[in-house]
Length: 476
Ligand code: 5BU
Image: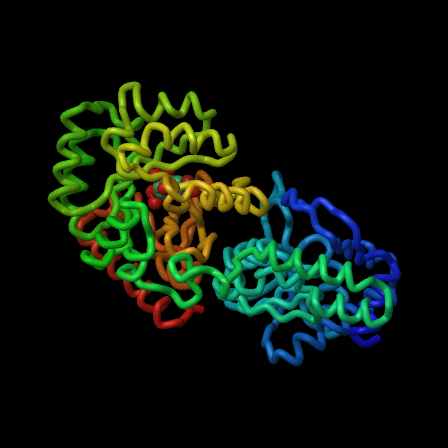
């Protein structure tokens, strides 16, 4: 079966439908793909496996193991693996709650190159998540193949994340084939084309210069000029002036320890991240001293408060109580779980003070639930609140918009984990491969016998990774 025959066959079995459909994102779409039905048609499964293998062959990708994005692409990858005699791995959708808690099942060597197989790509998020799970166990991913690209910007987003996407066909090609066989009318074709245009996930070429997404990675200086929020501007200019993308998470429990560490590490950082509710002796004088150090060393203060309540409550939590966070913390952060009311509440307090917020789009801890649609909805919330939200806490770049800053916790010079679920990536992995902007380091620095010296090493590693990113290299 050639690709035209396959498209017609998919239409015959209702794997492609036209009408009005509500997508996962809530958007109404005039076209819907339900490729799950393929498993009921051995001839289609066979043709899809052949077509995808041909797509991989033509694109010249090299790989030693396959992984299908769960669930629909799993049997396809299995078929390809068996036909081509290539081993595969299985990615779980959720880690087992018992036993080994492995996300990736199968036998492989560290550094093996894995080709991702997917049925349909819209935004590319599922491929990205699969790639992250694979990277976390030491597999390398640079390419993915997909049967159908909806042509809504997913390929560009994946390219920004370091993954080349090769598709057997895209939605315009499906329309062309179906129209030429009189399966659909010209009106339907028009309405789907309009839908594609209006629903580009990142409409890369059409965006105005100031909002041009970052495909070639812009340096801190350029981004200082591109962003509008004063805190984001200040942060990029500190990063440029001090040549650092290091945030220090000073998670110690007395004020004097915080101040001593902040003074030692201050010259090497752009941000000092606090958890003031772990201090035994919080006081207004402590805050004054911390602000003096921020002035002295030119860094911003980020209280990692992780607000998560309704707007009315977070307003009080941010402005009042013992800590009065909005009065001294340049940046704070919030979970998106309670909806945009949280941001509105924080903005009502912090907006006038020129404070800024980061949304938690992904977390570093194993088994966390911030992924997929949740992460995408968080990005949308940030986009809708760009006057207060300046970026994300995430384990990779979530938005190509250069005004958004990504900060990544769970960083050490060597990959690993702690006993309570924290997972560590290296500065090179975070900055060069995952295209985040700032590494957040806590224990890696304050548990060292010479925190100042070690901070300097993290600064150097972070900047080396940044220069590699600008030069278009990967660390793979
Ligand atoms: P560590 O000592 O480098 O593991 O500290 C990491 C810090 O980042 C710590 O303050 C956490 O509260 C914070 N953190 C995190 O580790 N992972 C996350 O997903 C988020 C915050 Br959000």
